[in-house]
Amino acid sequence: MMIAVDGPAASGKGTLAAGLAGHYGLPCLDTGLLYRAVGRAVDALEDQPGFEAAAIAAARALDASHLADVAELGSARSGVLASKVAVIAEVRQALFDYQRQFATQPGGAVLDGRDIGTRICPDADVKLFIQADSKARMERRARQLESRGLVVDRYALYHQIEERDARDMANPNGGFYKADDAHLLDTTLLGIEAALRAAIAIVDEVMARKEGSKP
Image (cartoon, rainbow, N blue to C red; front, side):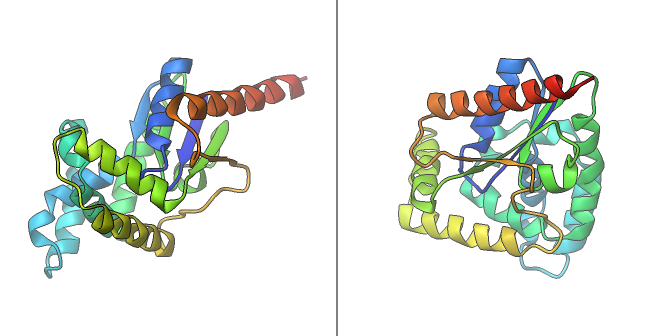
């Protein structure tokens, strides 16, 4: 079973993807970490002439070892860098095969990101698009960062999220939109457990319907 989970930053898609993976016994890939890792690799070159070429090289050299520092990759700075390298077509192409190989492994997988249901796994058995309003997403990300002992400027964080949304949606190479056959789940007013129950219910309903349609 292949499950695609898409949505904007801090919508809860990563938490839900991990919860779904645990519930169904599937491996899980947070594809945003790939772009964050590439972004961190070229941090020193931001806005410099060599930024794009270095990002492409970093994407082509990426492997699982570059995803180990989850705390660093989860920083607000890493998110900004991720959205900047994600607009580079060659970076996206370099990471496509990595994601596709993970998605098509025997037994299935859960992937979360921004273009999983539209570009990476258009053939996914179940597609979820997770959304939440910007204020709720800002507060979630702020609490996440504060739990790591970081001081958070909520005003700046809110605008970072708004700017990233705009950059992601304008990305000509991204495919960041709800797929026609994706199921929308708004988590603005839902806690983690309630959101996961709702996501599991959607997956179970879709799979039961598919099973029932088989001859």
